[in-house]
Length: 296
Image (tube, one colour):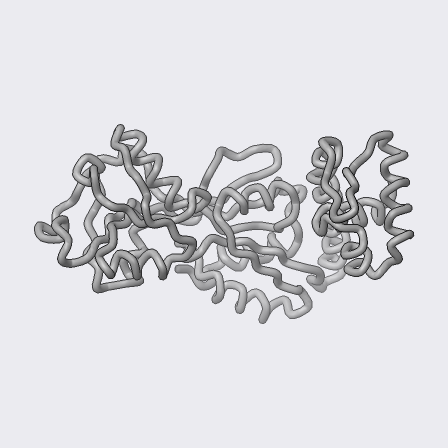
């Protein structure tokens, strides 16, 4: 099995099309098809279901995809490790992050990293914590700043950055704002909620808080960015339960402590592969963060 076979396989899996994958790889379509056939012969199973319009992965293809991505990520890390020993950090830093993550100022950290390591290409992807954890475990990302969604595994480890309580945000004219007192999930029964997509860390934390309290909650206004959520609350269209640091993004809103949440807190972490699989660029970024580089 050659590395180029795996590279070709991943490209076809991502593009769902041989012609587009061949154009992206700058190889002939016949050469790409021959490479995939050679891989299928070696593994003695079809990897794609081919139609006239698109190709999709077979069950065997889906099983191979994650392993192929990890293998290529490890090869890339090996090249970068040799370059680091030679005194120059090169290659690529593939980073993921949730929006408005606490505990790290991502833009400032990346700026400091670029000043120290100008030969490293920085790639940034923003997504929900669940998706980011999968990307790091599969080797598609070097590390990610996200919410802790699971315990550490043999493919994923976490370094704690910070933790904070959840806070209720509402319009100043809302009934909850009149007293300014702390509220419980029971106090919020029947309210209209604004919240994020279920893959977001904040949404997962809030769902866990209400489930633990046995309070039914219906999210009628679902968004995928922080500013839209704050705008909807500012128009008094609903309330939101968010990490405490969100209160500083819109000072006109009323922030109320949320009590009765048990052990549920919003903990942000750096997600990384196991130490032996962590790229030199990821190690350098974490060292910079731990040295006191810009934090949120």
